[in-house]
Image 1 (tube, one colour):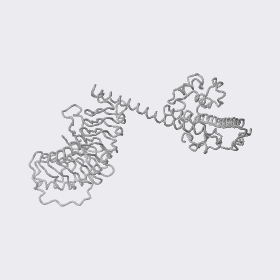
Image 2 (cartoon, helix red, strand yellow):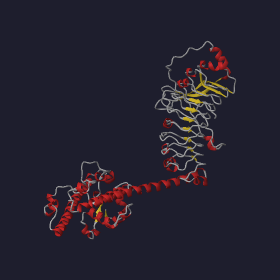
Image 3 (cartoon, rainbow, N blue to C red):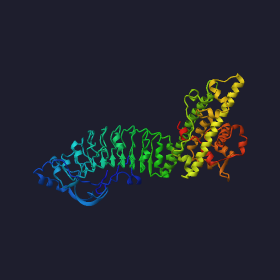
Image 4 (tube, helix red, strand yellow):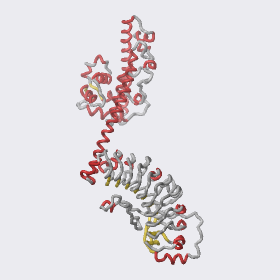
Length: 568
């Protein structure tokens, strides 16, 4: 992995081998920026050998220019300054030199590569200005806890070592408060502590993390909650799953190739800036539907999706391979989108079937009102699972789906409310008329009626009946009918206008038939006639006369079961 100073430049090793244009563009272009803070620690006094330390390290020191954040300059403000860098590559570095490294207070950047180090040099936390530390290609086995006190460190590169353990707290809440770049690739890690990635407390500054080429079997939840991470490389490990919690909202590149993953996080589509996703050589059979949010054709930014050597079925791996590249990716995502639509339709169908079944059960309960053992006013006895009454609350909030077309016009709203009141009166009269006919039939047959039903023998029952009018089966069906349509149309007006094609501002019965037959429900002719008569406030006996009638949008909306009923 190559790095340069200034804006951090780096390269995640391509897990697929070889090189390509996308490989050269890819992986970690890391911007290193320093934020200086006054240290609260009590520093050890420099040893007397400070001069000799500078002399020993002098051949390895050089001046470079780098970007450093300016105090008080606001977020992202920085300036280009000249700093001291220590670079030792494949050199003979003595233990004495390493022990006195903490005396080089003027050093901002340390690079000790291929020098046979078996541990991190001591006292680095005493370097107030240490901004970047690279100890690649050595034999380091453990990171000392004191490293967590490097409060100014923004880049820590420890790839190609023998590190097999990360102690709890090392990359936890109170450590590495400025750390943005972390490279632990090509080590021997098989486990990470639960607080790994929680640097600087609740809001981690980590932007680039490379844990590739280790032996990790899992990833801590904390790492997947680092909202600032832009590039994450977990390739060439032993991962079987990723944490369910996924909050990498700023992620641009995710590499998880050469693992044993069976699925990706369901909400990976929340990473709206994702450019590259590599999942080569895993056991993934199905891509999450949220990945469609990343697709360029759906306003996403995804440029590269590598899926080779996976048993993909949804979408088929063949779709990616037939034309290859971005074209193959588009073909596959089209298939995934079609699958998502089919799945949604199937789920909607099941919901509708369940709801329709529930409504039919309620119908049967309501029919018990017509038996000799239950009277119309005895709602609880007749239908214990259902106790609701359609009513009008003029002070209730107006539902935009119903009233949106009024656009606040009080006259239109009042017209709907008046129609509702008329509808309620009509339903009451219709119910009482029906009960009177029913009671008369019982009297003609048996010569008497149950005491509880005698009220309906009185011609003045319209005045004497004080019970609530129960919701009828046609009302229950109307609930189901409107519920299904609200999933399809943005408003009642849109639904009405879709099938109203005549010149007059009203719907004919033929147009209403078309509206009903287009529903996902199996709307039978009997229900269509009853719905139409209900809208026009006509008794079913006059359904033939209703052929010539027309319904206005106001009547259409006023007939709907409003939220107080739907909620039941």
